Amino acid sequence: MDDSRDGAEGADAAEASSGAPRAADADDGHGVDGISGSAARAARDLRVAFNRLRRRIREVAETEGEAQDLTPSQVSALTLVSKSGAATASGLAAAEGVRPQSMAATLAALDQYGLIERNPDPGDGRRQLVTLTDAGRERIEGTRQARAEWLARAFEDRCTEAERQTVIEAMAVLDRLTRP
Image 1 (cartoon, rainbow, N blue to C red):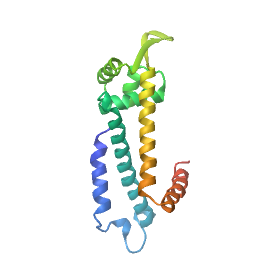
Image 2 (image 1 turned 180 degrees about the vertical axis):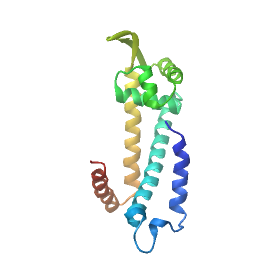
Image 3 (image 1 turned 90 degrees about the vertical axis):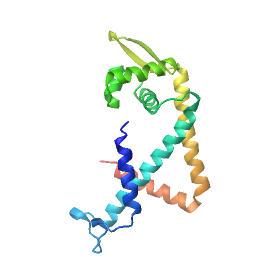
Image 4 (image 1 turned 135 degrees about the vertical axis):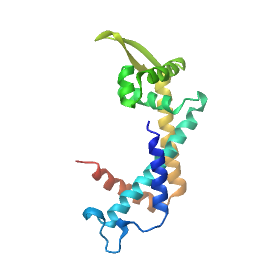
């Protein structure tokens, strides 16, 4: 996890809410380097909203984790193990961008909670592969379900049907942006 982004998110939020004119909001409708003001604003507003939503969803996941009081780095490592299947500690450290010693400490805590297990690598007996235990899988699935339920409930409680339909339509546009 890169905590340096949180500062950028705050700057993004301040930028989006300041109301101060920006180069991309010029009266002529043209942004910098041939990018329209509306495209620049859409990109900025989406980035700010996405970062806020991501932060809120993380809070929901952390609330679910209170039973074992996992740290953010432990939650991140557990999620990474879930996504990667069997992985080595050094591979996980590289993927998280942390030192192998830091990952070893994180994995030791997850092992102590019974959320991961380590088994010899069949291709190289000197290495160990880290996988989720049944408890680890249940934890990940419970967290995913809690996040999905929170988001669905937020849409139900805070948005009209027309607004939800607008989000669905906007997602099709955003999906198009992700394609090569």
